[in-house]
Length: 220
Length: 251
Ligand code: HEM
Ligand code: SF4
Ligand code: FES
Image: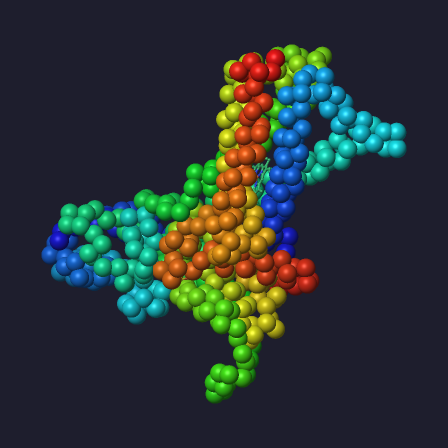
């Protein structure tokens, strides 16, 4: 019964969201290796696969992260979809006239934005991890794949739009998670909102410098 | 002033409803919104038509009966109850859409009147303290820090009108439940049942079919008593504590 409670689902969503968020910080910082050149970037990618060897088997770190992310994404989506359906059932008949006075674009797009982010994650893995959806193909280095993707205007547009959507998802998500975990109050409300905006903007900017560098020829 | 009203008319809980247009004239800006509806109903009765059903009781902003959606906003454009909304908030010639609260736990009884007993059942699930009644105890016998008593009092001003549910894109009753949980949870008298209260009230609001909260904040903006989003954070905090302490909802 406790597990079917709407608030319990929100807790699942907040905790899994924060785990994914921690990953996003590490991932963003890792990507910046591209500015140290192809060798450093490819070496970083190799390092992720061999760190801890020989004490640990190959790919230990990556496997741990992958399982953590898979569980987080599954839990996050389960809670999101189940609460989405609950909300639909709660108002089968919509208003003829409804004015919204408090919601932001970010809070209104959590659900469909989340779906787009989910689809993007699949594309992103096929593109840069496996190379199956990449112009440089599967038989290439991570650096080649990154440059090839961002030399393609369609792929670059998809990345930029989804990253901005992700930034908005995180902006409302950080505020919402603070509420869900019971850490907000009237005094902190403003600080939390400002932090959410600043943090999401910096994080997404950190991601966007990579495609920008390729598009403007700083990295090729 | 003269107004064009579009009002949701629905004959009963299962009947199909629709918006019907009416004109009212000679409305004084000093009338309350409900008095304006009274004028319309007198006009309808004289014409032999069925008057518009709407709820009301105190007409002084304290009972919480009178809520309707006015131009898409719960209780209309001011942060007050419909009975305390005055026609000076509108202009001559305005078109006003009036609809009932829409949420499946609030079935329409007729026209603008909805059944809000789901909120009473949430209260029954835990919004009380179990103490022997009798004469009021000496107020100084249980000291309460000023900060807590102020916050508890703010939360206690919730009148159970349901505007929060009506305004919420998820039709969630979280602000209402959070106000009740906060009001009792901040006071010494509320401590013995604190864990069971939050778990059972949340379980009951799910059982009634309300949506889940996504912290959008429409509720707090629509609330005639200005109940803040802080109460929702407090409810979540209490719920986490209660689940950790092993409290589980009664079925
Ligand atoms: C797989 C696709 C995704 C879907 C369908 C999705 C959907 C949602 C939904 C519906 C909410 C609740 C919105 C609200 O409270 O208003 C939410 C919250 C959140 N999401 Fe996502 N999301 C996705 C991916 C992500 C990712 C990749 C992150 C990475 C950090 C993330 C972080 C968060 C956070 C921190 C919250 C706040 C938790 C809370 O509601 O208390 N989400 N997500
Ligand atoms: S919280 Fe505000 S809007 Fe909701 S029922 Fe109480 S008084 Fe009405
Ligand atoms: S009639 Fe009582 S609050 Fe409006």
